[in-house]
Image 1: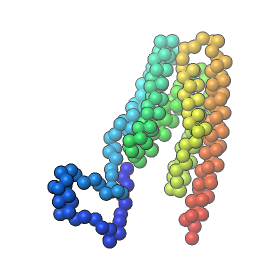
Image 2: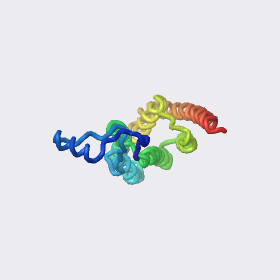
Image 3: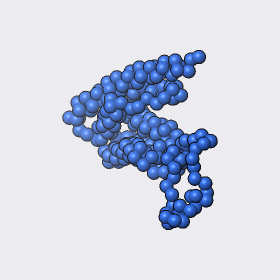
Image 4: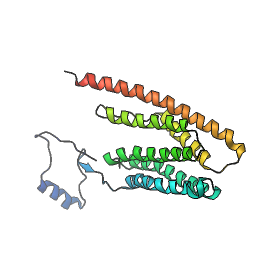
Length: 226
């Protein structure tokens, strides 16, 4: 992703000779002019982390379904893979913002990787009979709907992530992790509470996102109206 600022024809810019003289006199390369074009490399650490999350999805599924899907050792391995993949979700966004590594590819690939990881975990748990299908369907419909809304209104602007959305993601990861871990029956109420809170916040934040998307769409349509 690149950005550039173009000045007018009367922009006072030093010619090549002036730049060369300044470099020769000072012995250092002159700083680029403010607003000069910069290019973010497509192959950067943030995008590599996002790609690694996608690669870890099939690895996670293989470990989850090993030995019928209920062998304690393999479930612990699957949980570790899921936790590692979830960690990359936090790291890639932070790195991209702090180091200026935001790219169009990353903007598209990051939510796809998130949905692929969460969706595969929910569907896998439902296929194994560990999680009711209605939970998987509710979360999947919300996540797919929000993704479609994001692309529908992107021409009018970007809807920033809310605190509720971030809390929703964290709750989903924790709840899924509790269902993945080979915990004793005594932990079942804890799983229900965690997943119930995740589903509730998923629905609430989805409704909030829909309202904000509609407002952005209405403002955008009003701005481009003749």
